[in-house]
Image 1 (cartoon, rainbow, N blue to C red):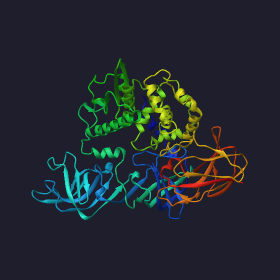
Image 2: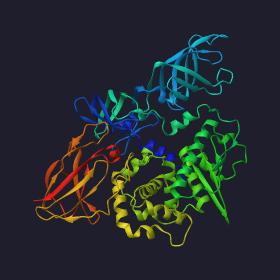
Image 3: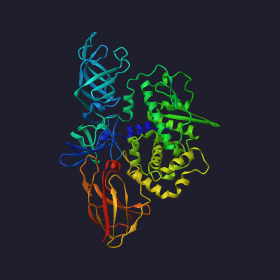
Image 4: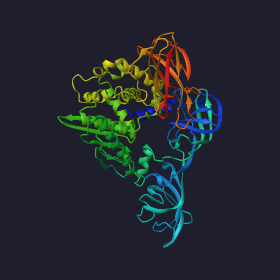
Length: 616
């Protein structure tokens, strides 16, 4: 069970072009300095409309990443200085968010007066505690200070924050204060996820490379009014458990949750984060498979091997995996009794991946053939509740986008008990399982197939279930690999196989509705090669929520109505149409239409057009 994340970091070290020698492989063709408006945000990419009306796709290295992926798959170490600000409603502050404010406190942590200004800060950059301006107060007095703490609760006129257990106030950890009638709150962040569509770009400095990529060096942005400042993902959990100790224990101890029991030497805070991630993952798996988890995954999560007593870790292979910053889940069965034992480093992705194996073995009796076992384990690792968009390690994504040749379906799905292989093998299995699980054309068959394979039912196989639609699956799999990226929505790109088409007689016409937030959509027309067809598409739609509406002629290509002809599982190249056009069909087949936009940014599109197709 090799760690995808660990090996991805190895690849990052090989491919990163941040060293002076490797940087010579790239050429800076232009230095940019502009202001404007953020129209769309997708992972580490921003769509910015400058003040002159030009549009720029800007790549920004996130604070928690070591590089930024370029369009050609290479990784460039190009740290960006990001500063994001903007007003928020103090009453909408969320529990766990870290705030900073000035106030007067007594020796018993009672506030004297009201708070008028609050700043929301990045949890990772904050030093939680109380900083006295001129020393702590004496008995029965109050002193000026700056409090940095996690929000416990917020409402109109009141704010309560929680300090860690090592508070100077003799075990009192909660500070409650009144807010003035005009109290304000602002964000000060360098977290790219804080930027909202519509934000003002106060300053962007960056470079354009000979690859065509624009990469930011400095980005200063202001949200006009933050609609939500809820922490996301790991940040939310880190904030939630900030009051717990971050100090590792002196020796391993037993920790438990409803579905897991481990010996570990991680801190109380890290275990709380891991526990919540694992239990959330179990909930997602239970809903996906329609089965309750049976049994408890046991094992070891190891931070420092030297801290473990000799003989406690008895599986040599497990110890070696931990030493290599990887993990493994040992599974055994004796009649109806099943056991899953984890040996893992502290990498959360590794832990989640291996615990999916444990869940599947305990619930179904096995993890199924290798393609399914590793593909589902990676699904469990990357799944985010309520977030259907793809969001995986950028190194893995870059590999899938640029690998040649690509793995075929036959290569991925057989043989049944192939070796786990490398992280590249994991990537292809994830791609297939994500497509089958997320695309509505195949999702209803994927779950029963996965269960049948893990329960080792006779006759269950990929070919038996998807053989009748092998052409459709292969076509959509190829399309998926051609267009996938972080932000991609397989449900929005699903091919409309059940649509009906008919040829048009001379002078006849047909109308079709084309939505901006979808991939290729059926026109209902079967075209004939070298015949002329007329398109009329009045109205407007949006390719970004914060952008201006555009008509079917698009804006610098984006938002343009385009077409392609499908025949015998082959799609022609895109044909640019527009609001009014006449085109010659490049081949006979079914005519498909869509709003031209990056496939990873369809979800924020809005509107639809009624398109009329007629024959001369």
